[in-house]
Amino acid sequence: MAARQDQTLQIFLIVFIFLFLVSAVVAYLGWKGYSDAEQRAAQLQSSLNDKNTQTQNQQTEIEDQREMMGFGRNDNPTAVKEAFEKDMTTRGAGIAEEESRSYRKVLETVYTEAQSTAARLADVTKKRDELAQRLQAVEGEKEAQVAQAQAAMKKAEEDAATQRNDFKQDRAELEKTKQELQKNLDEQRSSYVTQIGQKDTLIKELEGKVAKLEHAVSNLIEQRKDEPGSFEIADGRISWVNQNGTVWINLGTADSLRRQVTFSVYDADQHDAAKAEKKGSIEVTRLLGEHMAEARITDDTATNPIIVGDQIYSQVWHRGKKLRFALTGVIDLDGDGQSDMQLARELIELNGGIVDAYLTDEGEVKGEITANTRYLVLGDVPESVTQVKLQKGWNDMSQEATSVGVESISVPEFLAQMGYKPQDRTVPLGEGASARDFPARPEDFASPSIAAPRFRPRTPYRPPAASPK
Image (tube, rainbow, N blue to C red; front, side, top):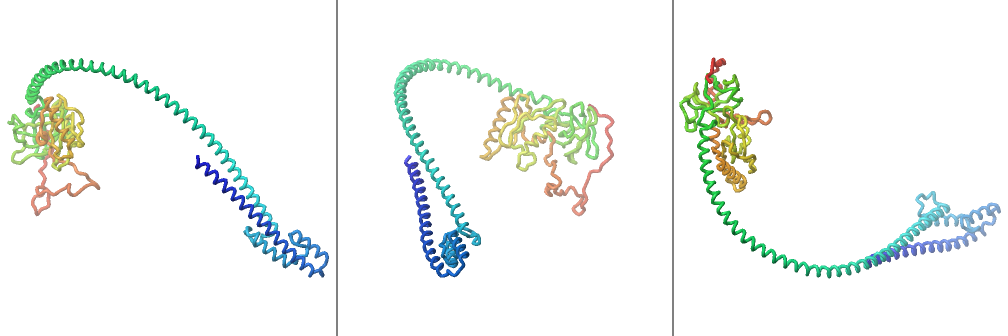
């Protein structure tokens, strides 16, 4: 409030000083004009006496003009001109153009400035009145706030007295509630002791059931080895072999076979392919009938070639049945140290399998392992301390697979049984191609000195006359 009063007094003092300066300037100009006029009148009177030889008409006219200009009737023209120039220099300085300076113009300028000064004075007076009104309003508001603060303080004192009484009542009720809670606690403690005994008995019963379930899971794993889709039972056999690397198998459209499904090839006399050495791999390229398909040899050896009657196996595809898989850990298919989880999922789906669950590169488990899941493919366990989430996901999926009786296999076993070759991969073409994706191989040339590729001899395509089922 003191700051507002000081501001009002400052504004009033400024206005007062401004009005005093304006009045002083106006008084000075008036006095100066009057003093100069007296001097010029004396000079003109002296000059008029020296020029009495001039005609009366001219003298009268000149005298009239001099009077109109504010000079004496007898002032000479030179003195009038000098006085005019002096007046224009002192009083006409506010006129921009010198040729426009005249007593009339000076009067107009002085009049305009007087009007402007009067308007500013009126504006200052109006602002002063407004400030006075605001000051009065602030004073009234201050008194109202003081009265309101006093009323609020009185009410706070009354509320404090009321709250003290309420606190006493609440404290009494709290003591009563505390006694009741202590009584209930004693009763519940006795009840909990009884329940703990019952829980111990139930835990012993559940432990017995768990032991029985573990035994049942072990039996289920052994039984699954003989189920359709096990690697111990062949999915089909080679019906015909062509010299150009093409074979025919006894599987087709009626068996739900699809193109690009890969198989591992084993000798016909091998009854347990899981313990035998693989002869090679094939990939289905064309479906020729209900139980006939054409495939290309993707891997074989000259010392043990693929022949008619060899058994074919697929870890993923099985006749009339979609096998379910789960993938965990770092699935590195091509040995580059990078995760190929997406590629592994696509290979399973391409071969007609289903991915029930997999571990993402961020350590999140997608999907769920169930009793219908046939295999859990175990990738590498992350060893970095920054991959704690991946390690936890690997452990959780392994434990879950064990609890529901899902068989676990390694990535090399999975790839070998499925017939997939990591080097058989695609590379980008066009602007994104790299020379490193097309390395030269010695076996592609007949000899080091002859840059001619070595190809297998090709023969015309002749489908077999018949293929046993």
